[in-house]
Image (cartoon, rainbow, N blue to C red; front, top):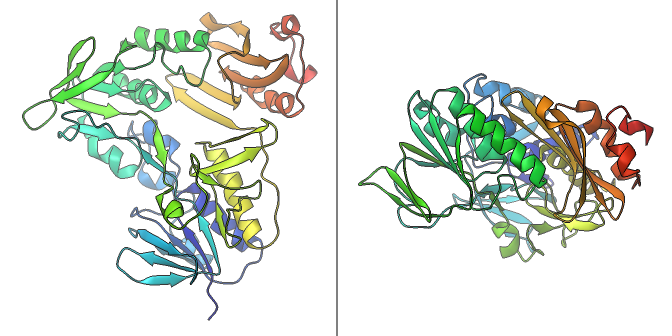
Length: 402
C-alpha cells in the first residue's frame, strides 16, 4: 500500500485540510494525529459559552464524531508525534512506532505561554488552551470566589466577563499600561476597561506578577504594586507556536513554521497551516503569524490543495472576533500604534467602529456591534482604499460607498 497523507495536529486547520482532501477527490489514506482525546473542535467557545456552561462539548465539534470514519479519515487521538524523519518520510510516534507518509501537513497549533516566577507550579493556577483546561477550573467559578486573571488580552477579558456573571470577585492584572493594548487603539482599550469596571471587574494595568504564594494551593498573587488574594488564578498571556517538531526536522522556522502563499514549507513534501505558521500576506505586504479561526480554515484548505498539486494562493484579509457581555467586537486587518484612528458612531451607545488609516490607506477596522462596518471593511482593506477621514467619521455614510 502506498503511504498516504498524514496530518499532525487535531485542531481546526488539520480537520479542514482532511475535509478538503476528500472534497477534492483524494482517495488515498488520510490519517490525523492529535494529542487530545477529542475530535477537532472550535476553540473560541472555550473562553465564552463553553466556560459559561451554556453548551456541551459536542456542540464545539467541527463535525460529529461519526463524520470522520464516514469519510475514511483515520484518527489517532491522545497520540504525540516525537519526530519527523524526512529522509525516510516517516513520523515517529510517542510509543516508538513509525508512520509513513507521501505528503505531510503540520497543523501543530500553539501552546499557552507559561509563567516561570516563584510559585508558578502551585495548585489552583490554570491556563486556558483546550477543553481539559476549562474543565479543570470551570466548576471553581462560583459566587464569591476570588478569581485573579493574569493578562488583559482577549482571552483574559472574555474569562473575566464570564466569571463576573457567575458572581465571582474578579481581578485582572495587565503588565501593559492598557488592556488589549497590543491589538486595539487606546480609545478602544479605554472603552473596554470602562465596560469591565462598570460590570464589577477590578482592573490593574502596568502591573507585573512577581510571585504566587500559598502552602500548596495558590492563595496570593504578589505584584510590583501590591498583593492580591486568590482562590483561583487563570493565566492568559498569549501562546507560543508549536514549532519544535518542524525545527528539529530541519524545516525553516522563524516565529512559526515558514511557509509560502501556498502553505508549502522548505520541504516539497511538507506543508503547514494555522497558528503555527509564519506566512506572507499580499494585502498587508508583510509576513506574519495569525492566531485566528479564519486563518486556520483557509490555510488548512491551501495546504490540502498544495499537497494534491492543485495549489491555490492563500491571501485573505485577516479577521477576528471577541464576545464580551453584550458586545461583539469584530476586527479586520492589522493595526499598528502609529495609525490614524477614525471613530464612527458613539462609544457611549456601545455601537461604533474604529477605522485605521496608514499613510491615508484604510488598513484595519474594529467594529463593536457594527456588523455592516465589519463586513464592508474587508473590501476597503483589500482595495487599499484612501477614504476622506471627515467623511469616514460620518456614520450616515456606509463603508460600502467608499
